[in-house]
Every structure is written in C-alpha cells, then in structure tokens.
Image (cartoon, rainbow, N blue to C red):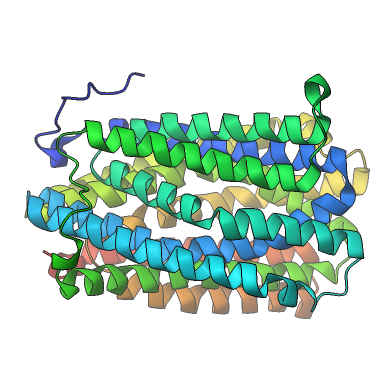
Length: 453
C-alpha cells in the first residue's frame, strides 16, 4: 500500500473507491488498539500504582478528546459535503474555522489541567504514590501535550475527509511506534539511561503527538488540493463555525452518553462480583477486534455519503449504503462466529479460572446477536450523519441506550435474576433494535432533505 504521489489530485471524490478509504482506517484502528494493549502491559510491569494512576487520568483524557471530537466530527461531515459539491472556498474555510476552535479549546483545557489538576486529584481518596503518578501524567500529557494531541486529531480528520486516509494511517503508525519505543526507554532504562517512569511515559505520548503534527503538516502542504492556509482566518464567516458546532455537539454528546451508559452498566455488573466483572472485560476486549472493521467502514461511509450528498447524488448514496451495510454486517458476523469456534484457546490467554472462562464463553455466544446489530449501527448512523441527518439518530440513540440497554440490563439482569447474561442480552437488544430503526430511517429517504450545502 503506497502513498498517493504528492502531485496526485482526487478529481471526483464521490467516485473514490470505498476500499481506498476503508482499508487504511481499519489498519490504523487495529494498530491503535494493539498499541494501547501493549502500553497497558508495559506500565503494569513497571508498577501497579502507575497502572492505577494512568487508568484514573485516562478517564479525563477521554472526556478531553470528546470535546475535540465535537469539532473534528463536525468538520468531517461539513467538509465532506463541501468537497462533494466542489466548493473549494468553503472547504478551506471549514478547515480554518476548525483550527481556530481547536487552538482556543486546547489552550483553555491545558490551563484548566495545569492550574486545577492538583485540586481535582485531592478529591480522590487514593494512595500518595498513585496521586503523584496521576498528577505527573495529567500535567504532562493532559496539560502540555493537549495542543499537539488536538491538532494531530484534527489534521488526520482533514486528510481523511479529503480522501487521503493512507497518509493519516502511516503517520499514526509511526507516532504509535515512537510512543512504544519511548515507553520502553522510560520504563526499562535501556543502554544505561535513567528510568523515568510515569513522567517518561507521558512525555513519550507528547513526543509522539508532536511528531504526528509535524508529519501531518508536511503531508497536508504536499497535497495541492488540500486547502488549509493560516492566512485569512479572520475572514471566515460565523456561519461556518455555527454549522460545525451544530453537527459536532449533538454527535459528541451522543458518544458521551453511550460511554456514561456503559459506566452505569459496569457499576451494575460490579455488584455481581469479580468473576462477572472479569468475564465482561474479557468479552469486551475480544469483541473489540470484531467491531473495529464495522466501525472503520462506518467512518469511511460517513465521508463517502458526504461526497454524494454534496454532489447532489443522494440516490447513489442510498443504494451504496445498503451494499456497505451488507458487507460490514457479513464481516462482523463472520468474525464473531470464527471467534466462537476458537474461543477456548483465546479465552485461555486471559484466564485459567474455569468459572470465568465458562461465563466469558457464554457472553461470546450472545455476542453474535450483539455484533449483528452493532454493525448496522456503526455503518448506518454515520451514513445518516454524513448526509446531515443528525437529530434523529442522536435522539433515538439516547432513548434506546437508556431504555433498552440500561433499564433492560437492570430488569433482565437483576429483577428477573438472569445476572450477567441478562445484562449482555440487554446490550444486544439495544444494538439490534436501534440498528433496525436506523435501517428503516435510511430506507425512508427523509435524510435527503437534511443536506448542509
């Protein structure tokens, strides 16, 4: 897989092969999941206090990234439609507006972290060593590194929206490799270097994002059709800012609500005991490698749909999304069926306790039901949003995840006493019902009236 030549211009983005968008996103996402797992293993080998500290701060880093996603998601959807319409001036203004917003949000968040981080951590009843590790990680990565993290996220979004997802993939892989190497030097002190511990791990992450920013800037400048100038920032009309936030805020809010719902469910499961919690974590970890494909297809579908809608070709989008749904669902179901055939050896990599292994095995069987619905959601919802249909999937999603998933988990798992299996089935109920509703929404063609350009 080679980068497109620097002078190569994508003339008709609506006709860009779907696989050219999707494959790089799949590889990038798989690699990110893999590196995240390696990071956890490396830190755990250094200190359990460090694991606890990084785990604590990761929750706040996640919410910081959600704030940046407000801008990046809105940018991707609006930019895709303008590119499909071949409106270069507005495409340029979208990129400029997003850069301005990311800059000010990043500076504000960095100040909040650096000035208020210690006060926040003082509210936790944790061991002094954990608190110190947490502050070091928070100040360096969440404070100093926020600007680099935000801009690398935005630059990757812009390149993918222009159709250059391979550029983003290669640079992401390079940055992640730098992160792992930096962690190794920080934690193990190779070649007689001092062991830097958690501050070194945080600094490695900052360095990786800084390198990503530099490389992404170089790639953007070498793409003649990617317009991202710093001149003329004051001339960007306020309507561009409003459109980006109009799209980004509800979408990011939905993502946050879903993760809060997952936290509530985990709190419920914690009352069932350690075995139940461990089984759920193992099942989620294994299943993550299944839905990465559908999620990556969904990201590409969102961009592709934006191209078609911007080009005033909604019927082409209508037909192709059904094809993408079929392919994505077939891949997800095939993967989860394969995992069920091989689940014995796979589960043994995580645990040797028979009771946990048996429960995890049952969860993976129910996951066939879950992943069928999840693949529909991960592909159809981005298609709707890419077309500008934001309100319906967000509002229905909030209703479904809290009624069918959270309330359903409580009723099936605790009132009817099906335990963790009942909770898992409720998660599947939400996914499958929401997926069916979203498919019917797409079939209704009501999204065709929601175009942004």
